[in-house]
Length: 209
Ligand SMILES: N[C@@H](CCC(=O)N[C@@H](CS)C(=O)NCC(=O)O)C(=O)O
Image (tube, rainbow, N blue to C red; front, side, top):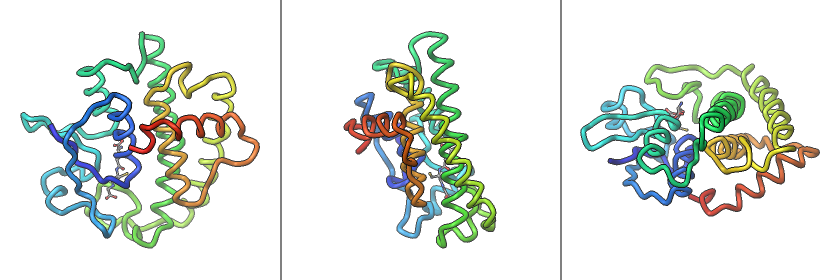
């Protein structure tokens, strides 16, 4: 199997951290280009035109970072990164989805509607021009404020986002915080629980993966 990758991009990073935590090595095929687009050969082969994408030896293409993690978690259950029993798996899925929808997506909304390189690329995964919408910058910032506040509250009583163990909820939340930084949006002062968590997960070797 191999992973189609764009080594600097935030969604592939969710998978890089997962692989590092598991101690897995899978062949990476870089399809990101210097102009911040994906290689035409990849887009022709894979109509969803987004990374990461895991291609199995039988040719099956698995897209979506969490679907790839789910597949690999079943093949390599240790250490568990998606929950240890029914309740825990539900909690991890819930918080991972919140981290993605309330953190990653607003960070993407803000970045893609601001950066000049993305002038006609307001959304990923399209070959049609998608113009930027300036109003989405402010909305992205406001959504990130709510994300920081919500996760700060959650981390007041929890070592990690979904409870006492490091999970995919942490990988997605970490990638969201760092992706927000691409637009100079940082954890606000006064969010001490989020800051404590961020410093701890950023210090893990997997965060450098
Ligand atoms: N929902 C997808 C999102 C994937 C995504 O947005 N990937 C970006 C890189 S971070 C991409 O492929 N962008 C291609 C583009 O900008 O055209 C997932 O969870 O994997």
